[in-house]
Image 1 (cartoon, rainbow, N blue to C red):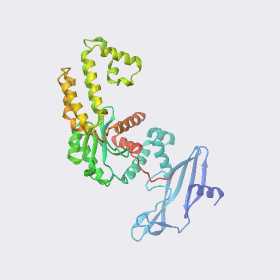
Image 2 (cartoon, one colour):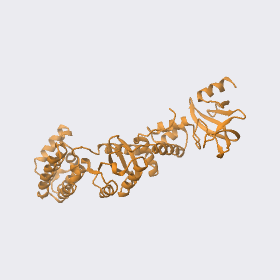
Image 3 (cartoon, helix red, strand yellow):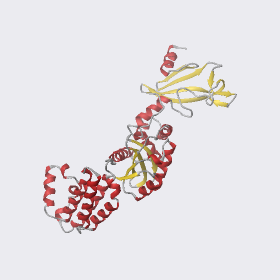
Image 4 (spheres, one colour):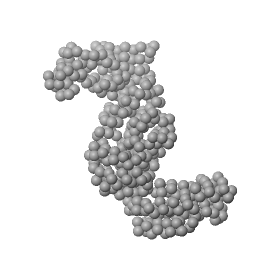
Length: 405
């Protein structure tokens, strides 16, 4: 053994019977090749039962390792096969790579780290590998880490859907509202997504009966799924979706009225904003528009009055406020859009009022969705929903990966 083989053996952390037998550096290709070997007659553990068995033959394998400075590095070894008296012929495992992988564990750890911060295709370009190989690594470790996820303590969840591409092929996300982590991602946005979550919950030490609160939008499919699959769960229709419905109704009134009132042109942003968040010039313009006593201005006041619901101290006060708001809107004759909003709010009043006293909102889900959309935008979309699910778990699942650091 030479000094350089001893040095590289120490750097790789090799232990007997493994050793570096040869070091080759190709300056033209900018590649470093480390050849590993073991003494004749060395014993290895059976990968099934752990019995010590002598190697009787081997096959050549190569693994991509972390770069040596700017040079690509590869480990070469004859992978021993052992004949176990109990398990038969098996390929021995090596300490630097997992079975079946063409990368070392440290290289895979680097891939996972980089893919948390940049698109997979960008990482593939940096390391000089096809992105398909990287997706295999990510999928393997995400699936491995998810098997160890404990959901026995989950009590409050958030549910939201997001699209894989612009308006096509949705996935539904389930998050632990207390631990602030994504628990489960599944294709679709129908009632079956709730059933799929319930099954996954059971596989991870939880039960459907333990879920106490579900924060979600007013999707009929979600309501049906929760009622069937999560029997003890209280549905909370979060304020973000309710206010969005109110904004849509106000904008519908504005678009109808702008045909006869040119002052309302190009004012959509003003009516969809909260007045306290507007700059002074915009506040002044909004005040001027409100003084015109238009249907749009009235609808806007109704929206603001509805938003006050979530500032009230308790459910009883909020319930009285909601009743008064409904009577005002339904009796105003302001327009069909606002009347539809009032009826929707009335029919979902119980779920809206379930906000009290927990004050649980889907703010976490909105944040998760924005991070997913940002990742999707940077990656310019994903080939399939499996890749999207893998990235969501990697970024937002708070998973623990069994890899060296």
